[in-house]
Length: 273
Image (cartoon, rainbow, N blue to C red; front, side):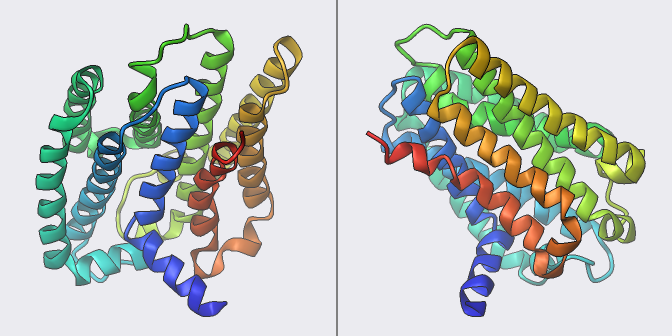
C-alpha cells in the first residue's frame, strides 16, 4: 500500500494525475454535449495541461533561491534541467498535434493559448485572484473539445453544470492555498490565503461549497436529478469533507492527492450506458 501511495505521489508531483483528470473531465462533458472527441484532441489537451502546470512549477522553483519547502518544488529544483527538456519535447509534440484537431477547437484553442501566455506573464501580479484565473482556464480547457462543436443547444441546465464544475475547480485551488500557507510564506509565494488571511479564506471556502450545493439543489429541483449533477456534487462533498477534517489529511500531502483524484470521479459517468 505504501509503495502504491509513493508511486501516486510522484504522479502528483509530475502533474500527471492532473493531466489525466483533465482528460477524464473533457470526456465527461463530451458525453453530456454528445460529442465524439478525437484522440488528437485528447492528446493535445493532456499535453497542454501538463505543459502549463509544469512550466508554472518550474518557474516557481527557479524563483525560490533556497531549498524549497514543498516536495513538489524541491523535485522541480532538483530535476530542473531534465524537466525543461521534457517540457520542450512536450511543447513540440503539442504543436504538431494541434494541426490534426478540428478547426473550431483549434481556433478557440489559440484564443485560450494566448490567454494562458498572458496569465503566465502577469501571474505574480494577480495576487489572491490567481486561483480564480487558473480555475477559469482549466474549465475552459476541459470544455474546449466539446462545447465548441456540440450539435445540441446549450441550455440552462448545461450552464449550471459548467458553473458548478468551475466552482469545484476554484474550491480545489483555494483549498490547496489553505493547506500550503506555511510553505508559501516560507518560499515567498503569493496565494489566496497568504494575501487575505486564514479567517477570510475559511469563510470564502464555505461560501464556495455552499454555492455549489445551492446550484446543484436548484438544478435538481427545477430540472431533474441527473447523473452529471450527482457526480459533481460527490466531488464537492469530498472536498468539503477534506476541508472539514483537514487535520487528518496534512501528512504526506494526502490533501493534494485526494484533491486531484477528485477530478477522476467523472470516469464513473463514462462507463455508464
